[in-house]
Image 1 (cartoon, rainbow, N blue to C red):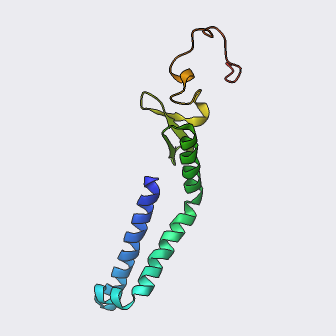
Image 2: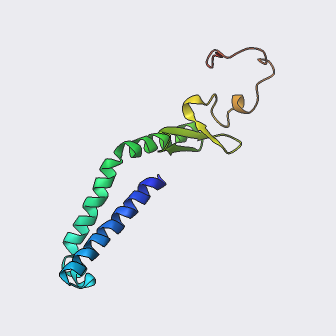
Image 3: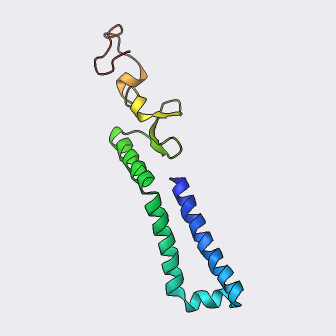
Length: 128
């Protein structure tokens, strides 16, 4: 999610730099143009932000889906844009892909195996 906000910030900076370049080219004061054309400047910033949000819509959807998946599991999750997967935090603090995790963090089957089923494989998690 931090990468999305970085894109948004860089888009804002790029918009301001374009306006600054326009002011230098035309010989107009930067702040005077901002105050005179405040509606158009804010519309330009909004268009840039919406364009970035539309371009990142898949990652935003996946991050939101991962967040609510973690809420339903009562676990810390994060979405990795680089790997394209939802990750869940293990008790040791590392993150593993949620599809490959064997048990919900904090459940009794996650920390230790019960004594009465020590030799039995659970049918829900088959072993290859």
